[in-house]
Amino acid sequence: MALVVSDMSISLDGYVTGPNDSRENPFGDGAGTLHDWLFDASTEADRALLDAAVVGTGAIVMGRRSFDKCVDMWGENGPLGGLPCFVVTHREPPARCPSVYRFVHDGAAKAIELATEAAGERAVGLHGATVLQQALPLGLVDEIFVHVVPLLIGGGTSLFATLGSAITLERLDAVVTPAATHLRYRVVN
Image 1 (cartoon, rainbow, N blue to C red):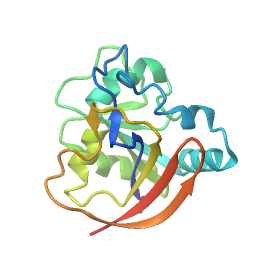
Image 2 (image 1 turned 30 degrees about the vertical axis):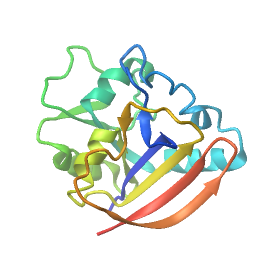
Image 3 (image 1 turned 90 degrees about the horizontal axis):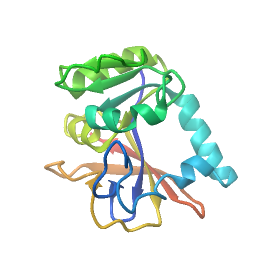
Image 4 (image 1 turned 90 degrees about the vertical axis):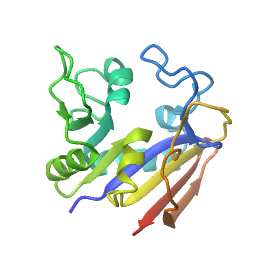
């Protein structure tokens, strides 16, 4: 069965976007370097982590806000070159939408169920703070992989803002590069 993995770049103070994020400014104010490690993959270790994530992912679950902000940037093939993307939403899809996106109106749990079926043996990647915040308390997340960038944003979207209770994690790996500290944890249920 596919692992469900949240794989996100965050600032040292825990933000995945800066303030005032929008379609025109998807990463928010002050967060322009948050994904530099990903786009540049400047060291062999950064490249290996990126390659493993891309090859190991079979489907993606994201929130509607992430979709709305980034669909133009990703283009017709979505964020990972044609993988199915399940968008958790209460609204109808836009009239013109790339076919890789499937809109799920029954919540994060249903989207993860559908993505797990689509992913086969590969992982389901969670994209966006809201989806993680919905799935984690339900026990639907197997691993959390954060790429801590040496940046303090001071506001924006916090990755773990609304969990409601403590979640125990077991560290599986830690890789330090000049661009980020890559930390992988297993969620202990």
